Image 1 (cartoon, one colour):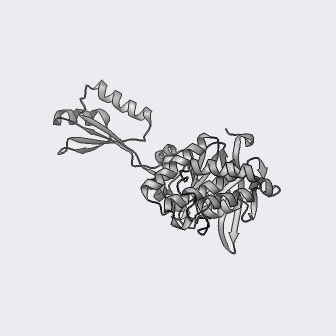
Image 2 (cartoon, one colour):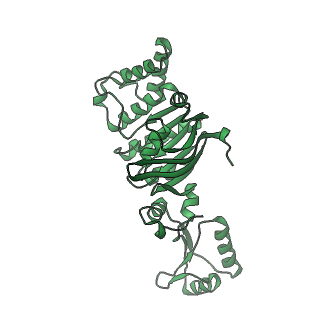
Image 3 (cartoon, helix red, strand yellow):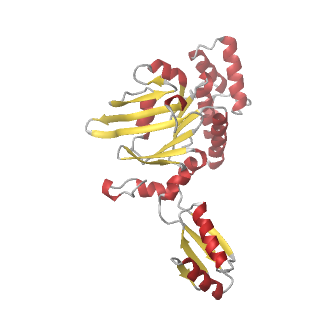
Length: 318
């Protein structure tokens, strides 16, 4: 179990309401240092509110949080010094060049002239913006603007970065470019708190995922753990002849049979142990399998099963 000293973010009982509308109803989160943690939820579920609270932009109504070892309520300035935020909407000034945007951030961080120039040069190189450094940001593509926006967040060398839907509106190539940048940051020890509407993005990047619905965390785990909570996984076995199909059906018991396609669909929880047990049964009965494929629920299935329903209709979580 991760201790508070090993956590980049530790949240307990966080609550927030807007009038009579409860947005966060006592959520608990723990994010180990040097990992990607993704918060998923439908529009209006409270993802952005969570980010705003943890980044000191708005106050919580209750609960507590430690960010990079600093108490959110009593040490907000220390929290701000330790974090960076890249929001849904770009903070880039269109009238300034890329270099000028970064230099402005360096000045705001009081880096000093020489140190600021070095940091700006490092970031322009790191984010592949050297050739565009002296061009106005208004001329940048969406992917370039997003890279510049994240580079501006990194001027102060934050320990924790909040990325609130950072690739919204980007084309697939630019999105994957951002994924590579995120992976490099984590490899360097930075902690990423990610909210996204792209479930593939969470699947690709996140070490752990929490699903937020009706103001509560309804599930948390690794992407694979969450997928295994949803029914529908199966192993599809195909055979060269009807005799093998019939032998397999007798060996495995519960399965859906398609005699025309010479296929057998066997319920499967996605675990290696269950797959090994299935193969052992087939081997013990000398069944020849022509081909085998494993099908597991994806995060879309998880998201649809866990969100947007009344509380009494939700899939039970473990």
